[in-house]
Length: 461
Image (cartoon, rainbow, N blue to C red):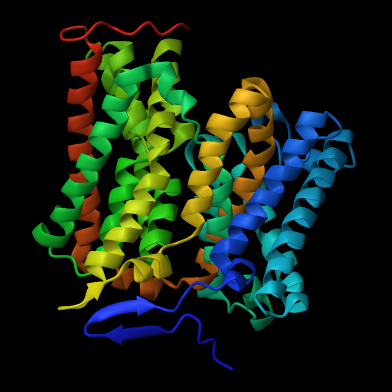
């Protein structure tokens, strides 16, 4: 029987949606992603607050070079046992949450559980490879997840029994809600208006510039790819691309391209920008802010900033953290914009109920988690306890994103990816947009932090 609850009704060119049903809270993917993430947060929080236990996601430690051989995870040592027990706990927690959710969505829970075991095992291989010391510096887990998934989907055939657990959007939504907890507004206080000026002034300008460049200048038909690339370029690469792609309902191939090109240029910028700053003897505070506002990955920002010194590293991290706060708000704005403008047909009026119907509900979970941890937890249990809870949640978030990228690879073939290039226009969009981003961020960082116009902030190292 078809589900009639989401049926759209058209009256006099006004699109509306059927009324919200309370049962949606327990059977729709967006809501289940929120509840699943909140359950993980609640268990981790209780464990930290009571001091009884630490419910935390686990992955492989660094290996290779001075960190030791990969065999340390397979030789029965204490490190080996501790690592695999932690990963088993992580698997069980995620398997229970996602399997129960699939049951509530009226899907075959037994088939899902069997398939999830295999997808998780593939993702564990991804996490193991990306933990190698050299790889972890330059290539994030997303790269290896895409590669392994693409190899399987293009050189072999993805077996039917595996497909029930290939639920990219579900993993992305759950991971993003978990990520919301780590987006703390207290970071704004650490750098004040300087950080806001660099992170919040430049970011929307770059997005708007790239939107008009892509849709009008380059005349790209795929507007979802345009906005996904713009978000990845202007905010923080992978996380922003994931949130924006989900908000505008972009294709997986759009997200794959945006993340792929972002990862490649993150490596180049992480190495090249500190060298450039040193060659021209740029002030470390200005250089750190420039790096923090333009390099797409938080980890790469910290490495590149510290290459200029401890002060630059701290400034870079602060700017990036302040910038990351925008992720939820940008996703919200993109969802509303695409619903009311891009996806609206000629002569059609989109009512408030239709905006709510199409709006990705997981964004509410992201923003809610951010507000709760920023203004409730930090003010009641303290900054240190809040940070301890966030450290427990971090790996659960990363596992969800890694599962999502593995699934993207499993669902994508090279022919589909090639069709997205549109004569190289997406590549041109990224290059021109990132160049604009670099120039504008540098100008704003210099204007605010050079001491020419404003007093230099006192950042203690």
